[in-house]
Length: 304
Image (cartoon, rainbow, N blue to C red; front, side):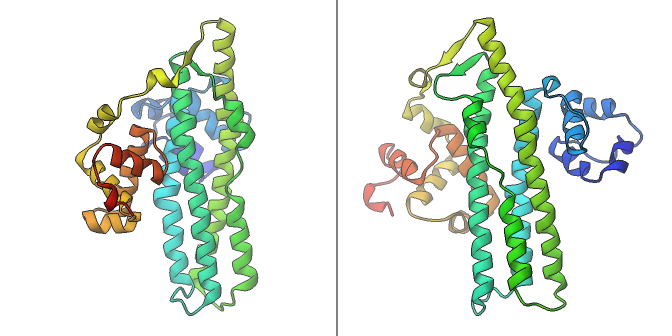
């Protein structure tokens, strides 16, 4: 394992997304993977891919790869992109006096919102579909080809942002700005690689499972109406804190306002909202408002 890292430092990120910690001494790749309950073949195929070596998607474990992709999404949404935003604010004048600086920040915030929507869709829809495949279920209304046909790279706007700053933001000897530009460049490359892993490893591996299920002729189709959970049961699944978050959402609060009101971190609020969406399969504010009114969490006159 140590020899792998010598050849490519980017593999440190790969290890983290597989949940593999450092401090493994002189253990082999197989030993380290077994200690961390990571599928060795999946780990090596991802390593080969990011190292521009030959790879084979047929040897991949989809549960292991989905775990890797979900962990990557958490890294981008909860650490990497917020960290870049903080450093960007420190590097440019965001007091409101510099209109260009405010436009740059607005561009970045809109980009992050797009990335969040992109990744939450994958977490909640695509990965859930693949988990159903593992149980032998196909969907009448969805296939991995439908996802692949619409799957677009999400790193290119960071390159555009970098170009905007370099061309139009007049700063001299701004080491903070140079540093954040470097992080933007590295993140753009990392996000591009992430999307390529989905296109070249994840999608073909899922398509192979679909083909095998159809070939075997033992197909169980999911029926949305059969799998619905009654609203009363869904309500019981929610924790008291999740119900509090829904109530705040219906009152028009954003994540920061909810965090302040409930004495939580913004990260915790975001996690609660993802869990609520997963449990209820409701992914819009309007849907949550209707749900909250129907289940008497709020009165209609309280809704903003």
